[in-house]
Length: 428
Ligand code: DSN
Image (cartoon, rainbow, N blue to C red):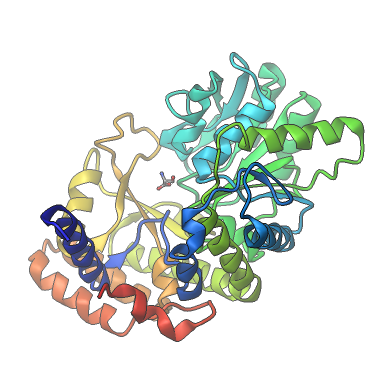
C-alpha cells in the first residue's frame, strides 16, 4: 500500500469509528443489512451486463441473469405491480430516465418547488432541466405542508403538463394523489410519483399506495426508508394490454437503458434483491416503528420548546419531522449538532430562498429505528437536541451522552443475519 491508498483506508476507518458513536439522522440515508452488504463485495461488482436477462450485449451473465430476474420478481411482489426496472443507479437517474421516456425537450411538467419539499431532480436546475423540461410549480399549503388540491387541479387543467410529477424530499404527509390523478389524466398528463423517501413505507403498507391512487409510474431510490443499497427503481402497474400501453412500457424501458444507464451496477442489483426479500418479511413492522418513532420525536421536541412543524396533524406520517430553527439559522444549527455527533441536514422550508442558508432542519428516524431505537429513545434524542440547540451545552459533553445512548444500539434489525452487523462496522 502506498501513502495515498493508506490515506484513503485510514479515513474510511475513521469514518466508521465516528459513525459508530453518532446519531445518524439524515432522512435520505439508511444502513443496509449484513447480507445485502455482502453482495456489494462480490464479483458482480466487476462485471458488465447491458440490456435484459437473456438478451445481453455481453457474455458471462448466466448467474447475473438469474439474480436480476429474481430481483425484478421480488420488486413486483413488494410493490404489487406488473412492471419493475431495477437498473437505475439512483433515484435521480430513475427520474431522468422517466422524463426521457415520457416527455420531450421543451415540454412542460408540473412539480413542487424545492423550498416546499421537491427533490432537486424535479427542478429546471436539476434533472428536469437535463431533459430540457419547463417546470411549473404547484401551489403549496405550508400550514399543512402539502399540495393545495383545488389550486393544483386548476393549474393542471390550465397547463396540461406532459408529466404531473409528485413526491417530495421533505415529505411529512401523503400526497393527495387520488384527488388529483383523474384531473391530470383528463388533461392528458402522465402521473409520475417520486417515492424515493417513502418507498419502504409504501412497501410496508404504511404511507400511501401511489400505484393504486392513479400514478402511472413510481420512481424511487432503494436506500432510504427502503434500506437497500444506493440505487434507483422504476415501477408501474400498466400491463401492456393494448398496443399503446405496450409502447408506453417500451418507452419506460428504453428511458433507462440506453437512456441513462449503460451497465447497471450488478452488485447493487444483487443487494437490492436481498433488500427486497428482507423488506417482504420485515417491511411492515419496520415501517410501523419508523412512523411511531417520528411522531414520538416530534412530540418530545415540541414539548421541549422546538418549532416542530404540523403539530395540528400529529407532526408527521412519515420517517421525517421538520423543525424551524429561525431565519437563516439552519446551517449553524446543523453544524452545532454535528459537533455533538448528531448528524442532520439543514433544509429549506416554505418561504426560504437561500439553499445554503435555510431556516429549517429535516430530521429522519429511519436509521435509528433500524438499529433498534424505539419511542423511549426518541425522548432521549429530543433531550440531546435541546442540550445543543436550546441549552447551548458544550458539544464535547453532549457527545459523551450521545455515545452512551448509542452504545446499546449497534446492531441492524428488520433483516436476515441480524446479529452480524458488527462485522461490517470494522475494517481489518
Ligand atoms: N437529496 C437527497 C435528500 O433528500 O436528502 C435525496 O437525493
